[in-house]
Image (tube, rainbow, N blue to C red):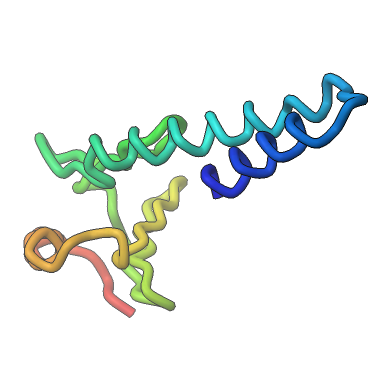
Length: 114
């Protein structure tokens, strides 16, 4: 998407004589997509350490493993539920080896699977 918006912004600038400030917004949208892409490429999607599972993205959720009461596998996601929190993990974003590690750790928990 970032590439498409960048190309669209370049075409607008090159072929449009009357540019509004809004039309430069395509460059901003493109930059945001590139920043998100490189951040996600550099950082892991999920971290499991010291008894805490955490999503590694801005505003990502985290949950203590010992608080998890229920684990649900639905539509390519693991939904972890505690008394007052819910954490959804998209397992399609995790490589196979790491997914096996995650499943092993989740199976160790005293949680209800459904």
